[in-house]
Image (cartoon, rainbow, N blue to C red; front, side, top):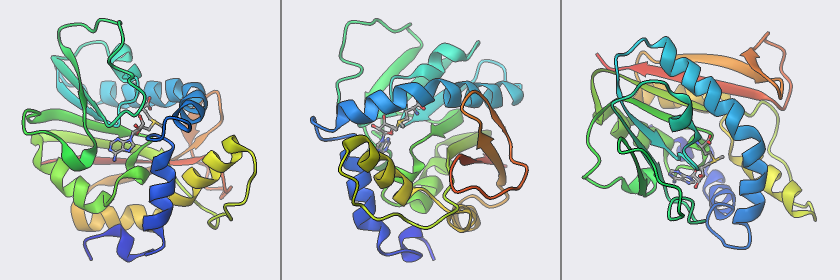
Length: 231
Ligand SMILES: C[S@@+](CC[C@H](N)C(=O)[O-])C[C@H]1O[C@@H](n2cnc3c(N)ncnc32)[C@H](O)[C@@H]1O
């Protein structure tokens, strides 16, 4: 098995719906307004995890970087490349980035060859939007330097998929994202096929903090962290 879609064929059309929120001009503002409230917490979480690696000025690639909040939260890096298909012109505006920060408009499915290897590759809150997470993880592994780290954080689905019947757009956005979120089984399958030896940890989003999960299975607020280290 090399494709998480093999597990749930219905996910392909759901994923198209979930991705639309980051592509269609009328939908992007709803997604971005929602995300702006949660991204700082998740970016700080990822920044802490990178700091825990204890690396000396790493080269970092941030897949699905959004605004690139992460770059502002990491103390010391040699280079940061934020990659995002970005349907909302986030990085064509007037804010000037430091010389060691670069943004590339691309999806994980089409990273240009000009983006080279890194010591750390991270993805926060977007692996569920990738066309084929197992395949892309294998490709990202190939972009890691020896001893490099891949960190992937996203929401984990515990309960069933939801009917897509909400009238209100924000509710519809949340349902569409929920329906593509990965289950624990999906995460384990990705690791088994593409990230052998990776650690998976489960956390809980308490809205003002992300804390290790106590094992209770609520349908919302669970997240996973995949940490793969290249030999
Ligand atoms: C919830 S935002 C997370 C942004 C950022 N990682 C953060 O936490 O601040 C999801 C991001 O994934 C991006 N995205 C959507 N599909 C993608 C794909 N196929 N490859 C890479 N990024 C993608 C979107 O454009 C959006 O910026």
